[in-house]
Image (cartoon, rainbow, N blue to C red):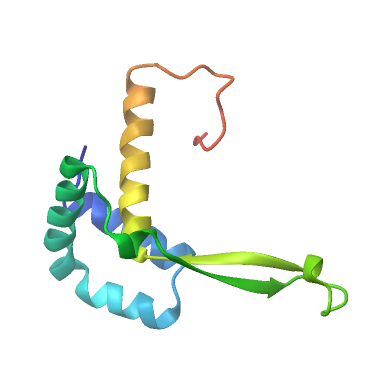
Length: 117
């Protein structure tokens, strides 16, 4: 699985485009070259040992108001704020697995969920 700079840069760009707050975006843009190698080492060690840091497993769940009466719990949806490191590792791992499955033609055409094209 590719855990080097290109894969991390791609995932950081996706986080910047899709999920991050503007302050985090600017920080990631400025430090992406500096954090790529340490994150690569952490990701490889985590995969080799089969252990994910506890902080990466924690999430802050916040209720987000949808519509209707604000006093009714059903009018809110939960939003889970998780570690950006875990999101990066998850994205890289998913991309590697999908690439392997597609390269080896292990997915049927009927298995189209979360696939490009």
